[in-house]
Image 1: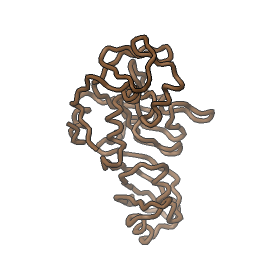
Image 2 (image 1 turned 30 degrees about the horizontal axis):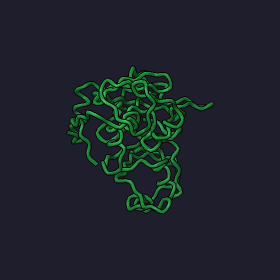
Image 3 (image 1 turned 60 degrees about the horizontal axis):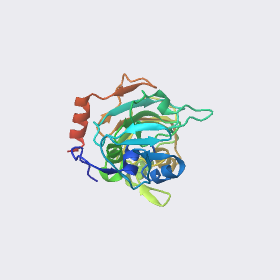
Amino acid sequence: MQLSTKLQHSKEKISKYLANLGFASRRNINDLFKTKKITLNGKMVNHNALVKDNDVINLDGEDLVVELNPETEVLIYHKPTGQVCSNVPTDKNDSVFQGLPPRKKGKWIMVGRLDVNTSGLLVFSNNGDFVNFLAHPSSKIDREYLCRVYGDISDKKLENIMNGVNINGEKTSFSDVVAVKKTSKSKNHWFYVCLFTGKNREVRKIWGTQKLTVNRLMRLRYGPIIMPENLKPGGWKKFSKKEVAKLQNLLKIQ
C-alpha cells in the first residue's frame, strides 16, 4: 500500500471525505447516510456526491466547510489501563477520547486499538488516509510491547512462539522476543516483544498457546513512533510540523 501526502484532490466523494474526518469507518460510512440527515450546500445528497473546497456539508445540524487537503496532524496518547478504545465510554470505563484535546474541525482518528487492560502508546491523526496507511498490514509496521508473563518459561516455549503458533487457524509469531534480565524466583517474567500485526489481544493469545498468562502489557512503540518516557498515563503530546514531516520521511511517505 502506498500513500502520497502531496497528491492534491480537487474533488472527492462525500463518503470518503467524512470517513477521513473520522465520522465513521470506511467500512461503515455509507450507513451514516441512512442514520443522519446530510446535506451539501443546502441540498440532500447520497454517499456518491462529490465535494470540493469551500462546499458546506451539514451533518445533523452541524456545518462543515470542506477542506480537501488539510495539513496532517499527529498526536500520541499514553493510554492508562481501564480506558476503552471507543468513542463512547461505558458505565465502568472512560473512553480514551475523553483525554484528548478537542478539535475545531473533524475528529481525532485512532490508529488501531488496545484492549481495556493494556496500557501504552496510542497514535491519532486527523488524516484518514494516513491512519489507514499506518494500520494496514501491507505497510509492515512493527509494534513493540513490554509484557509481564506468568508461568513456567522454557527455551522450547520461546522457540515455539518465535517459529509461529496457530491462532484461529492462522499462523502467527513475534518478530522478536527479548527477556528483561531480573534476578527473581518469581514466576512473573518480563519480556520485550515485537510483531507486525495488531489483531485483537494477539500478544496475549500468542503467550497463551504455551499455557502462559500475560498479566501486564504496555505498548512502547508503533513503527518509528516511540512513547516518551516522561509521558505519564493519561497524557498526550501533539507533534510539531517538523516532527510530522520527519515521521512521513521515515515512513517513506512522499
